[in-house]
Length: 589
Ligand SMILES: *Cc1c(COP(=O)(O)O)cnc(C)c1O
Image 1 (cartoon, rainbow, N blue to C red):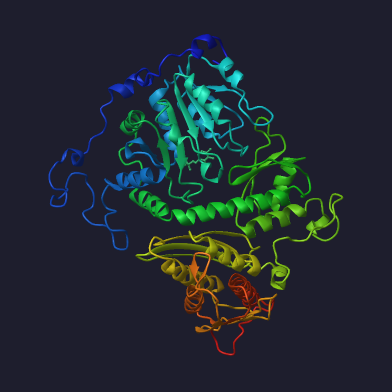
Image 2 (image 1 turned 90 degrees about the vertical axis):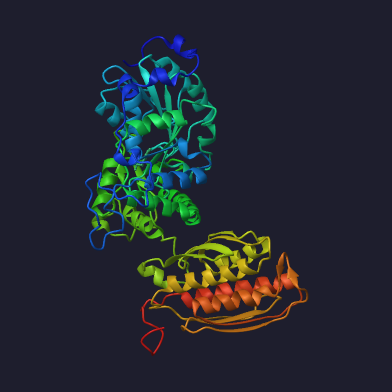
């Protein structure tokens, strides 16, 4: 049923009629009903002897796990709807997006008669699900820039076509489609249009969710498997009109999602700040990895990416794939996909994992996998991740990172700290001048620092500054772990015209000394009295000894010099000695 006739009719499809799309058997279906659905009395008072469950959970298992999960989906739908700005009635939850993909086909396309449209190279599950459901597959290949050819879509359009699958950003090509093109096709098609946004959180372009109201045939798929870090829980989401959602709900298995999976997804949503930080970190790591891969042997091109993976064109995908595999690195070989000759798909990992990938890749073509000398005519390259001041990096110690979230009645602060970073900062506290000072810590200490703080700034800056300091101190303490192999002490001598001096000792006890006089009571929006408060709170939370002195004319310069010196002192103190010994004559620090 490929690419045949009747495009004219499809170009003027009239209004979308959902009822005409629903398969007869689904229309007639009376969904499964449990006794609990029928019960209208007081749920808290009733005893439930209707579902053949065990009356109690086994020891050590979560309370309530012996019962079928009646409300878990409702709670998750409500949280998710609030986060995404839709109503709970527009949300379907599936056992991964895979379930939603399958169910959409089962509800709207007749086996043996209807077909779907896909744009290869794309996510393989659309075709697999179509084959399981005995549907035809209309393939309209992407062009050489991996873009949809709009004319070809209408040429290939066929009355059997019931569902179109856009993957945006697309897997495996990592690019996004033109929004206008997708909408034009949507408006000129009588069937269901699915836009799979599994990678939308990594993408600068907007989701199509706000278009749901305007387009009754639109279904937007998202998932907790990628940016939210819950691939193991299996939670996928379809957003659509309440009419489409109610059909999917009617046809799904009654308890298609486990209670724990729903609860984990709610927990992830409640940690949205950490999720955003982690997405930014992945994007930064992706951009760095992309540059590095361009210099690797056999690489012809690294395609631009709006996702958390990179498509890499090589001169021989199988050779690179096998070589990496021999070095214990598994990537995805996509060379047999249409338009992907020579291509590998590489997921962005942690900084350490990406380093390992590059280390392995560099050894291509070198006899015995020796990393010294020249390969493929390119000079040997140095590892780029290590700050030159840290010789311990040369022996590839694992990166030290910590994520801390601290919530109080007044503030909610999430910090991710990488001690062995490159000075990358993303700081949002709502206090511009404070952000600027915190950036000094990252930049001059070569830390990677992500901070998201929300606080009672409508009252004043006090709680936000103090609680950020405490959370930052806790992050340092956590990232330092058992402190094995650190220098422990840091100091910095006079800097520029402003002369700031900071002494630090991560000895495990807090002590704070402050000798800074300000000429006025504010710098920017911040009262200068908050600075000693900031550093004292840090010293208490990080359990460190901290002495700060600064002199100079201009308050702004003086405090900036203090933050810079603080950063330098921190860097010295957390730097690792290659011997890895604990810098204390006692057993612990
Ligand atoms: C990973 C991925 C999904 C996610 O599938 P789940 O079943 O939710 O884990 C969906 N669509 C695309 C394009 C993907 O790459």
